[in-house]
Image (tube, rainbow over all chains, first blue to last red; front, side, top):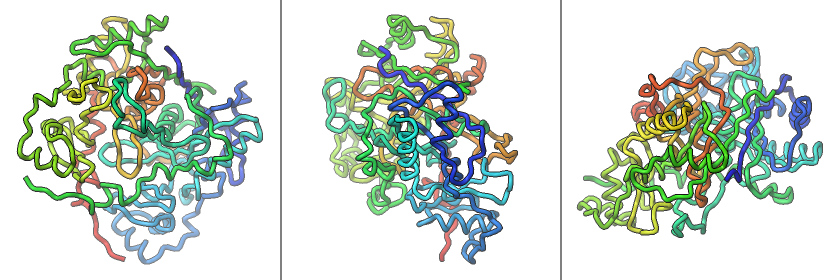
Length: 269
Length: 269
């Protein structure tokens, strides 16, 4: 019966990650110090924060000069106008703006609060904030390649961040970058148990990996990495790495019922 | 390092679930036939479909007489007006309606397509469809109690269903009912690694359990149940069972930036 037992274990990192740190090396060493090895087909879920730190995405608010627009928006929010300036610099479109919330579409295409800029778990200097990686897919690909180079193991990598969502309270970890495994598992063309064509055709497994890993990572422990072992899938070869992207999970504005209202039918009772 | 190793394993059910089947008994027997036991603190994730089947929520479209409104809406959709009639009977509010999609708020407060009514993995009779359980929290509480009665083990139960979401393609499994564990893990009042107050304060762990379990459950295998073992949490005692509800995860329309636009600030560049 137990065909696909999955194990998820946290990897503690006893080091403050700094620019140009080799995360793959640090993770593998952390495993080795606990007599553990990376394995083929492991899915390494890495918190966005340490990726951003290693990629030198810390910014000092003291270096930011807010524009008039940022100053004006900051008045609505009671937020630091310099933070607003940084948010807008990472933003292609403001999606929702209220007194409490600034939901934007980032340059990457993510819809999230404050362009994903973090102030928690960043630094003991309250003026330091952390931007998302410039291209989390490339971050994931580089880590996957680096793990292969160091350990000889073909792993997948998911970069995860904590996002809110419409309709439901609380946040969950979702995937913002991926390498080595396609983010959508497709059931297109498959039949259900009764031979009927499946209507639910695609599962966003990348987001399920990110959420599952969160269960062992937490927010207050030094565990920004988790390894998911035993997931049953075909490992993609490095040759197709650039065909795999988190962009597969980004719904276009045109197709999004909660951004684009043009395709709605208005009806009355 | 490995403080909180989590294991997730699928439970195969070699039986078509029928009304009044005792799911807890069936799951425990399936475990025992593989020399496995339920354990204290296990989180049992159960697909909504088998819960609905055991609760006699199958409906036959031949028994449904569509209203004029359902007939009119069906013309937009190229859907069966009798299915629309059932959807509306489970609905308190239509949230979005397009030629392809009918997104509603269900009686339970869930925002989902077609009021969560399933046509896949339901029956070999294409006229049979399956409604959500009437009260999935109560379904979960009953299972939790039944597992305690049969096995003496204090488990948690999550009822999971596959929902789409705004902004991102693909679907994920989320929780629609829960017992034994609070659906939100709160970090309110806690500090980050640097002693700063955490801004991300609540994680919707119930949805992360549901998504994690999906990774072993699949859609075409007879594995509608998964057990998550090793999650580190305080088990709630049965006395407080009715304080725990999936309603904790339902954002009110008032607080939802993507349903209620009244609290938006309009600005111009």
